[in-house]
Length: 61
Image 1 (cartoon, rainbow, N blue to C red):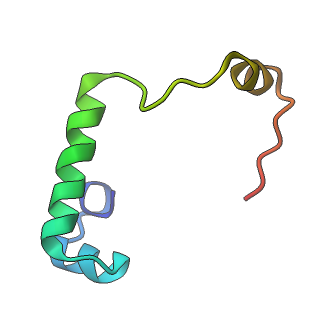
Image 2: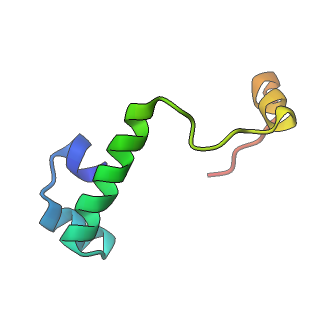
């Protein structure tokens, strides 16, 4: 995200997240492939989905 959205170099991104530059490149590659498939990472169970739709789920930041 830091590279794609904010244009940070992989070197700067690596410093911020405490990982190597090559790991940051690999993470970006995997995320890009995943998003390209158009599939959700996981399926929410029906109850969780219903709670989100009804607004009865509380999100704590």
